[in-house]
Length: 251
Image (cartoon, rainbow, N blue to C red; front, side):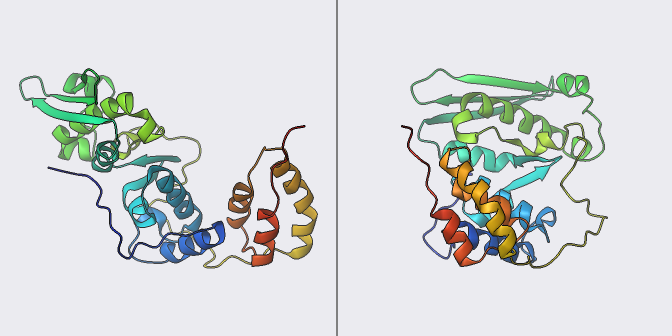
């Protein structure tokens, strides 16, 4: 089955600057079409959109296929395969399952290169404390083994396509970190629906420092705007002023 992500020239809005991206993130975060982890979370929504853009996904594809789990961005196994299949060096993939040993095997290769295989078995899952774990490991153990083998194989051979992403299936099994930015389904979080405008006096006092960061190459104007836009709504004049600063060429 071909799992490549569909590409279309139809109604696929893409923001052209950070201001538009933040506005789009706020709108999508308030809709009922996004996963629960992004509902009323414009900051997380914006980060997912930015990560998706790096991977070649439009905003909607990014929100449907990327997940923030235990504070780490991840991607669902089928979308992970789709990204690799779209890579110009993709040669092919073979996935099999040995029922006798309960071992999933994923073999993938780049064009002109040798085949690379990765296995993940029931024994591996038991050693990792996953076998019999409540949830998908109990309900769909065969698929979980296959997703783990697939994730390891694709990351080994196509790191340039995946940019460090791991599968959501794997991320769900990682130990919890001190801070988990994924809201639990049973916890209601009260967040502002709209961001207030950035106070002009505060903007003016901080601009000198931002200007220095941009000119010295430590930050880009878009990175400054992205950081500020998670807390305040920048005016067009404020955005233009930040974007007008350029990195100084070394003497």
